[in-house]
Image (cartoon, rainbow, N blue to C red; front, side):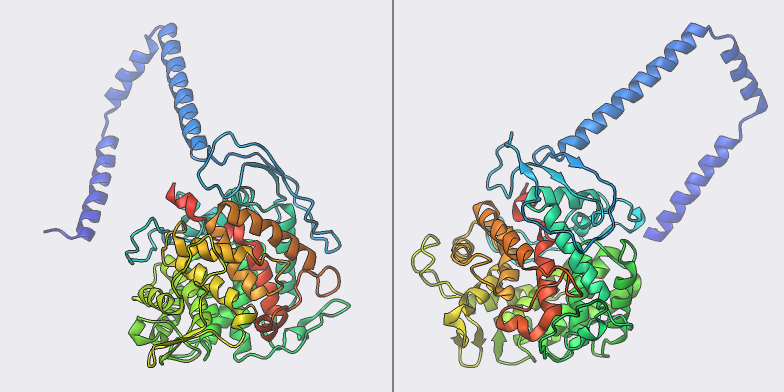
Length: 531
């Protein structure tokens, strides 16, 4: 039986033979055909020409109508403007947003209504190299059977060749901003954050959580606080890269190519032989997510081995041979929900890149079942249980809420658990996720200044859609746009707020603020993929 390669060769030879046969046409044949054309009446030639022209015009019209129909439910007008220079003195004003218009089509559980959107093209570049459009694995889903219409392909799908990350650049990005509630103000804030990261990247390509302030170039310099985490360079570099990648910039395309290339080069050069970037589960998960997304978006061969080795290290650290969660160091009996959250996002990024993630999703599901008490009163009664706990010990079979569990830590952990449930495919219409969503509505951004909580809850509430996202999004924009620093070297950054974020300093707080405002195009909502 011929091999696939032999079939390919046969097809090539067949094409070549056809070309040779086509060339073997005698001069006599051409002479006869020329005489035929010469003696044909002019009106016959005219009819043939105009008939062919009308057929081609009709085919073009039908094709254009089909293309328009693909986006008919979410149709909007996009006004293009000349690309402006970045001006740090410009106000990032929540009031400079788009206007809403009445929907003509009713969509069940809509994320947002149609809008006319004004987006300058600075961060939605159509001039990115087309051969470097964001890519990704479209069938990257969990194999867990959850019995519902779960959604696990969480990364933006641009259609055609754009792949899982196609909403992060070009027209897909503009459409997503308009559909899901962003606007000129949110994109201005994202750009300001990326400019801050550009100014504070070290010469070796890294962003150090503990010493980034050595790169301050403007006056007055940033207030740097006292961040203290282990392996600060790899973790900080992961944060910086995620922000650029989330906005559609890779080492191949976008105005920040050099920053992304230098950051990836740093991580590649500082990966240990066992695949780890950091000794701690948090930091390693963040760096792994960055290299996995970079590989998924570009399919650069030199990144595949780096990303897979990082994933393999994560899998080796997962507890119970992959059938529970993660801890700071592993494997062990202690399963930490916060660490598991970052590792879950890393595994989802790796899965979308087509990398081998083993049975990691099954372990995540098992961990969530252990740390989430059952509901006592249904999703409409958020004061009842269902709050996610901090740790589970597999030796004692006991859960622990955490020392800050009764002072806001419960909501922070519940937001993490909520997002993890979405990422492994749980139906957003299910009781547990709706109960979690109701809990988030009791503490919207602004009322809560905890950036760690805001980040996870933003990603999760975006997936819930409908009224959940509408309320959350309005509060989110007000909170982040008003609190972003304006002027001086700190322009575009956010002050570290919340006990966890203070440890990661301005690098972590700015990354979380930026990634939260990229939510409109960084991940697609459940409702769209179900359509």
